[in-house]
Length: 251
Image 1 (tube, rainbow, N blue to C red):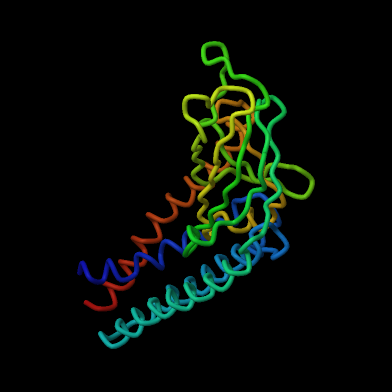
Image 2: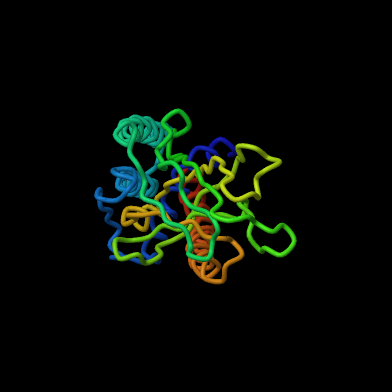
């Protein structure tokens, strides 16, 4: 029984993630554009989700152990094909510069372009790295800003926020001088493009860095969190449904 449960878990995750796209902003039709800053990656994630749905829907037709083996093989083939497709899409992003802006109230600016880092990008994760510089001295006691508070918000062509996402890390060039005017450091974002956020990210044309303490950031964060919450709720229900369907057929 444990083997059966482990077998369909990866595909069911993709299924629920795909279904949750209907609750996102955008066209709501589960389609992605290749014109965004992430190229083909979002469309690949959505296509993978569609294929996963088709595989899982075939679970109702399982009647024998041989059917179960074929079902497992379909999932493995889907994962293998998706990995190769993602690798090819990532190579197309190599060297591409990402347009970035900063909230007006932040005392930092980009001092070097933000570029996709192919050495760190893999599978569904994309990594982009740049350099930032303090535009004024940061008073550690009075200022509410810290470089480690920065987080990425993805904007559409009109500058409207789509979602937040990714792990943002700051590495100062000189730790002892990190609050001085003109101090520089590396800013890196690691972002997973998955079926549940792919349609939103396909429309992203720019990245805006904001402070996690900012009220406007919190609004977009709440919106993104709601999409993810619905995804997890649906995931639990769909996993149970798939388990019952498979086990019921093989009794």
